[in-house]
Length: 251
Image (cartoon, one colour):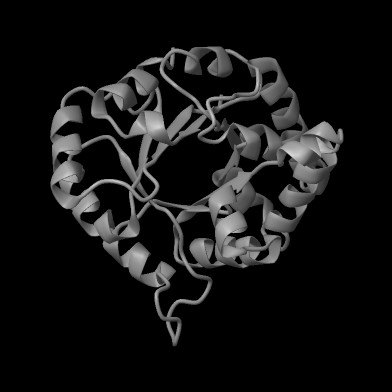
């Protein structure tokens, strides 16, 4: 049985006082960790404070990006070694905003995944197609290709512990969303690709989230499907009460 994982991706939002206020609001209100894994992905400048503020809470901390080298002359980048030293649990990589705005390639994502594992953290690897790809009927082939590229060189044991997040680009922050059935079918393709690369056992273990305009009023429909194991949530995770509602949707 795969434990559901709900991860908030705050993107480039919040100030230090707002981070503290958020954590104060969720204290004592989080569901039991055996029911759902709660993750907060804050801007990397808040990683240390978030780790400290949530030390006694049942919530994991995710960074929003990391470089694939541990140190060196890479101005403006974030070291995975340094993130691990802070106590970071997860690192979100391959988000469409990173791919589209900053030109990250599948190969970059793969190298980052290896660096994250090298430093004893877990990657949340984002996948997803554009509207053009969807309308051309190429979603399955495109997403399967992203999975193969992202996982190249990783072991089965590593893959069954990481998290994959299917986020159709056309649904991120647009108010549009794939239907639960549509999302589940694509996530089945993702899981089958993992099975083909590794084994059915590995595929049955890996958790796959859906992301794309997920809100408290629609998350339960996605979680009710056969293959969706949680959600990577942007805007609806910014407010503490909304984040708690998302977690509370897990039955």
